[in-house]
Length: 519
Image (cartoon, rainbow, N blue to C red):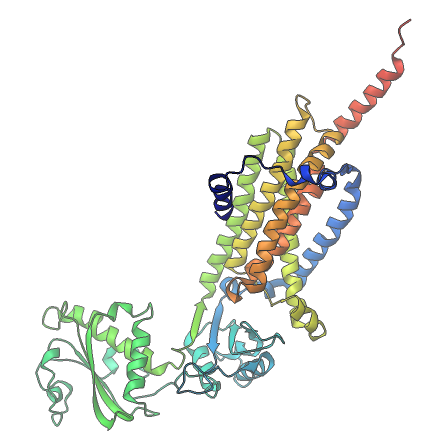
């Protein structure tokens, strides 16, 4: 888009008449961009290099094993917690900070302190990642906690309780019947008359509830610790805005304090009504869609201490489905590429060369991701990890997307060279050494310039893009570089028909020896 604007300005506004390409102006640059390198002669060097780092990559993958997989592919819980403001009354004040080690010690101690069958026991191996850390790479005001514990509420409550001194998240509350998962064992009543007490078997309560006749009343008693009215309303608002309860957003509701005051509530009644479905319309439907849903909302809002934390949960079943889908996506892409190249170039040799290069790229990139995690985890490499902005990258859906992007980029590079090989070979039935060398040399400028500009853009993303795309940009950064190398050093040499080329060369030499000069 920017290039289009520049060209339009040059042609339409400045009225430029001609423009020479840079290599035509600077002759030494033209010679650099059109080298005379015998690439096929270097194939054994490339073989040693590729075997070395692909082998290293495979070893790294085997060494890390399942540790490379994120919670999306193994099941578990991810919590993002922002530390509170240094001045709780001033949202513009800086947030307090902590180090990764301090957060890690406290989180892992939670898992160590419980029995092996506890829902939070997996916290003993939790992984802590600082988000947008300071220059030391370990100090931040925001951290991601990744654990293979799958009980979202138990993990969230444990984290909130442990870090009450650092978080704004409220403590979990208990109240009468808070353990009941259904309305049958709870204080949930239909509102049938205009006086509150007559509906909940508390005749001393004379509050008017005429606006809620046909709705539901939920009696919440013996709250511990005693919350404020504002905190209860905030909890309910947060819960309603979650996907689990956003169907309740349109209902009218009210909180009536029974014991205590707005600063410390011991008991209250929650009133709610949906004009579209009252108790008088259909009692059974009201029970399931109004009473049960509102009771679930009350329990979720009050008994959870992690509502103000960002919590993502993946069950083992979902993780298994994600793994199968990701594997199928990569496998299907390689299969379709095999067919596409075969049809386009009319030769299985070209397909095999492209697939070999892509497999080479994917294995190497995944191996480097595993290596990055190893470097991050070992304190001896702490300085190197900080200098290279390395995090403990995990294989998640974002990195699968990065792999598919790398496959597409590397394939495009390989096709450019293969197209030139097909063009230069003309009517020759095979690709000779001279044709391949010439084709790579002719396209090397395009390859270097395209890859260079792409790498520059991805490098900016890696440095400044933020935590959300840090792993993605790391994979692209190494993948684009490896993909450019493989197009030249892996795919192109595999297209060479060595047997036919050598046979034809020998035949030509014999023919020259047998020729008799005229006269």
